[in-house]
Image 1 (cartoon, rainbow, N blue to C red):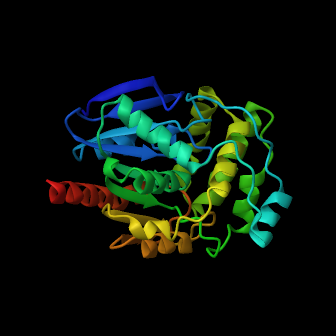
Image 2: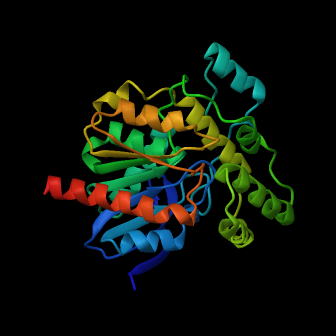
Length: 304
């Protein structure tokens, strides 16, 4: 059995951050950063345990405005008109905070836990946050793994219509509607036939609902992504060993997003996973966990 510390809350960067640790205190620290509107439990317990079993101290946490971390205020629901202005006229959207603030949350959590540097693994928006930490606080990053993420480059193709509709759907009005919507959403994002995942979706949705929803916070996170601009040129300066993982059928952050990330970071390795959409289904875990394990431990041995 791997060591496990139950969820705790700590003050970091002026907000409360809820986090949880799997693995031994003296193992290589590995921070998991989740995506837009996704609580830390979207890094599945068993996924975290398997990484911990490979010799990592795995830390997952709720980003600001989600789950048990601080919920902020301000900002209006994003409109299709604002998105149109951004895409066609490059008129930026207004935002209560940006990805750099979420990067500072991540570093603040590391400070609170006494971690000088760590391996960062970010999924989707979490990949963008991990990129921003690597750019703004390079000395805190032992290695970077960016999963199903992108550079903010406006030339990367937009989401499919179906995936965009999931992103812009109005918040559910009841628990039943949330559970139903959860299943529908992940069916779209997985972009394939995953009966073993669909069987678990109602239970997962119950757990997410029980930890608390914050639709306005998801809106603020989306604005943060859209207001943070294009990192492509800045990413040329990244020196941390970088692994980019992306699915070949991702409908939300298109495969070109991963390819653009890998092309922008010197010496980045790119792993395209055949048949993977915008999700981390169990059937792909062995390949993903092996890749993270090899990459992070490889970086650690080079640094030693």
